Length: 263
Image 1 (cartoon, rainbow, N blue to C red):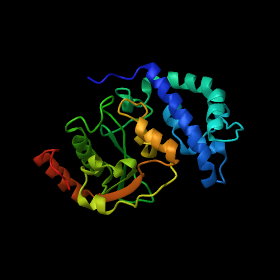
Image 2: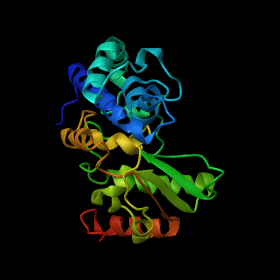
Image 3: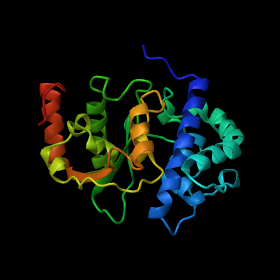
Image 4: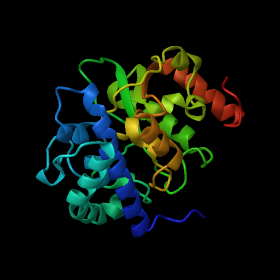
């Protein structure tokens, strides 16, 4: 049985991720000349929403950027300035944080299909089911629980079609760079994937989830890649496919087992 992360593990994770966020933001300044360093931290790292349970659209004076001469100096200066506030907020948020069992069922999240969630209709995407991915099996991985993702996708297609009459499935996520995620989609999904690029991330785990383990701790390999290269290892890519093809593919997986190759 995989152990749930302890409070101390969580606080160590928060410190390491906050420091990485400051370091990353410093280097991102040259690509975002119209944004302040404080805004880059808020809008382009997961510090506010996913670590501290703060709205990413509301600046906090406790997290304002302080003067520094370089990335390493800025990282240390920001941690010294913010650490008491960050530890306080992270400690309060620990029971409901990513990686804790049942966290996606908390009022803050309200996922409607296990580890998946679909949105109400988007005016700019008529007929499209925009969905999101989390980890309802924490502290285990969604890929390590047999049948879990298959059941989630079956429920998502069934419920969203009944509720909104959707005809097309759509999402944008870093998981579209992973074969074990693409396994659950028909060939149409692969054909419609947007190209890989060094894109500037937002604040959500649609970009930053690649830095998290199933237990809600920092993935050392992907974190090291960001620190060394200044961009995320996996690109958050868009794709879509018809409900018709998705249903056929899910039926194939149900009949032949999840060990079947989809390639």
